[in-house]
Image (cartoon, rainbow, N blue to C red):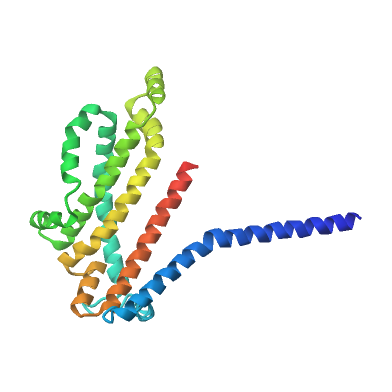
Amino acid sequence: MVNVEKGIRSKLLSFSVNFGKLSVIVTVILPPIFGIFLFFLFWFFISIFIKELPGPINTLKTLFELLSNPFYDLGPNDKGIGWQMLASLKRVFLGFLIGSLIALPLGFLIGMSSTVRRVLNPVVQVLRPVSPMAWFPIGLAVLKASNEASIFVIAITSLWPTLINTALGISSLPEDYKNLSRVFGFPLRYYILKVLLPYSLPYILTGFRLSLGIGWMVIVASEMLAGGVGIGFFVWDSWNALNLENVLSAILLIGIVGLFIDFFFAKLMERVRR
């Protein structure tokens, strides 16, 4: 009798484990796979009616060819897709870092002081909607180099989400926290590092996530104007050669890299919220 009960329990346990795995597959894994399948299916049918548009099969073949030798170097204007992507990522992260170093202290000041908020708010609201490419001639005139101008464009267009989210996080601090800090007489440095920063960190990370996403979108257009090495230049150069398969392959690669960047920040935010 005991053996029968143990056998039933083990079967129920294995059934629940298998059901849990099946549930994860159905609810978590299958939906995005189905979405990607629908996307490629739609693309396939569109390419049938628009002959100039390469289909997904030929584009994926081209992408695999580009990735099979990503780091070849045959001169300044003929480099592998790996070098192009690394050059773009370097510009994006440099611009993002510079923008964040400007946005964080300004965000803290705006969030902590209503006077600073009233002074700087008009400037922020005027500059924030300016098109990223409108800044490129200014960067080129000041810095005298297209590479530095691209980094400047990334910095000035990516700083706004970090600035606004940081200010929002700081200004959202509950009054109880502020009153306790006054009662205990926390020094300003301790108050910022131990009270304001931990509370506003999820807001700041959201700003980082948005800023880096904007920087990754802007870099393609910026490099089209700047030339040289970069994924944006690769897209423009491929278009000039009427190689749409290369263009679409680069678009897929840009999207995949952007997905990984966003996924990294999403996981980081999950850990912080725990």
